[in-house]
Amino acid sequence: MSKGRSEAAAGALSLSVASGILLKYLQEQNRPYSAQDVFGNLQREHGLGKTAVVKALEQLAQQGKIKEKMYGKQKIYFADQDQFDVVSDADLQGLDAKILALTAKVQSLQQSCRHMEAELKELTSALTTPEMQKEIEELKKECAGYRERLKNIKAATNHVTPEEKEQVYKERQKYHKEWRQRKRMATELSDAILEGYPKSKKQFFEEVGIETDEDHNVKLPDP
Image (tube, rainbow, N blue to C red; front, side, top):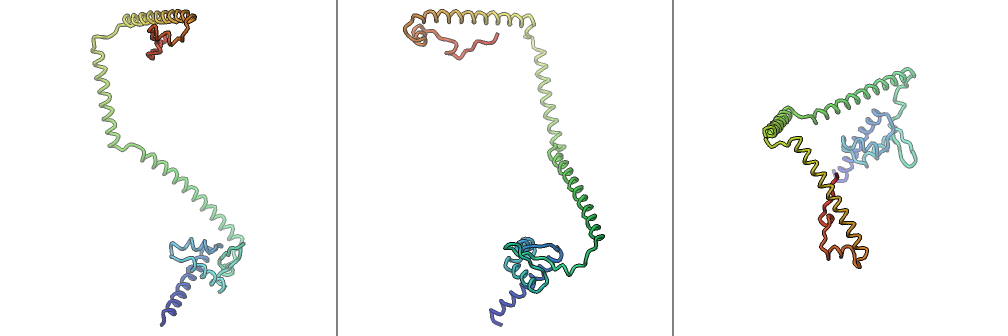
């Protein structure tokens, strides 16, 4: 047998295999598909090429095994409906009821899955027993350190009495008042001199050697 005849025979066999796969698929699914849809759905499982799918669908349509319709510029393929038994209204109602029951079951399972996912997330984010034991030991050490510091503070003899504390506050208020008064007096005096001074305030301060609180980033504290 020549090389050309061998390739033709292999191609025919491949087309036959593809036709069988596509016919079974369309009959089982019993819904319309484009060639691209069929290729996308079956390529991974059966390894069918796009060209083989198109040829096989066209051949099945020509043989009358499936139906073909044009929708715009796209061909749609589906199983021949004459091969299926006529479904009565009662059967359709039964199928509808079954679909509703299965839909409710799916929704219930999805809700259960969401609850389990939330529970799993909570469990995975929680501390394990060894991690919790380690955390407890670290907290115990921290508490022991605080107790030791408190013990040392209580044992100290240089505590400030309420009377001493009050005296410090009074002295602070006194010096704060003096500071404000002297600062105001110095400002008023310099302003009076500057009224007849021919140069700027900055030049006057430099010549006299006056340093202000602002020069040293010193701010009058709150009373």
